[in-house]
Length: 242
Image 1: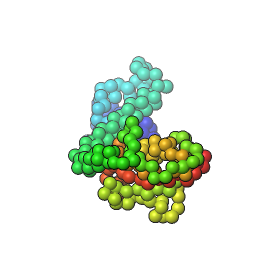
Image 2: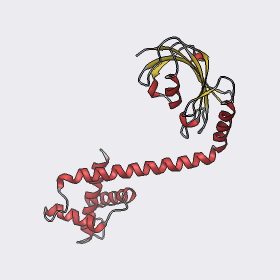
Image 3: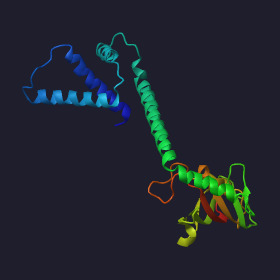
Image 4: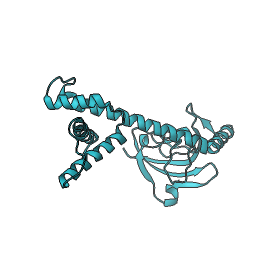
């Protein structure tokens, strides 16, 4: 059941409870139907309060009554799904953005030293012999030039790579696995997408990737890459497969 249907059920059943409270209220539960009826109403009210405590009770009751009587409707019934869907999608987006902002602020504090270490490393590295720096901040060193064509961002490529942290810790390596890998150039980190397009097939480059062109504040959880880590990759472009 999607979120709109869930909230429609919650609102409808809670309205029944609300309207009943303005009429005759039972003071005791005398049979199983009484208990189930009360439990259902209470359960829906708890869920509504937990998920939508902004509800205007008066308009809520008015809307229910108008719907039952089919009179004095302030909203065309054909527009109900659209109104509810738009609101709850916006609400979900706002919640997600708030959570991401809070997670980013937490990571900024917790991993500030790692971020600074990467900035310092790249600042010192850019003046070393053979290092070139692009407008985005990607640094690269040509280990071997190729003679084939260059891929585009939409190309599918076959590569061998060896990835390390700036302290030399290996976190991933097709070379160590003994098997190259294939992927589309626009489906990897920004540093790779940009760097691959600099290479001719057959070339081998070393990329020094700033954190903002790598995984930023949110690398894979539980992996060896910390938030804001700058990364180093040796990449050999073996083939453009598509």
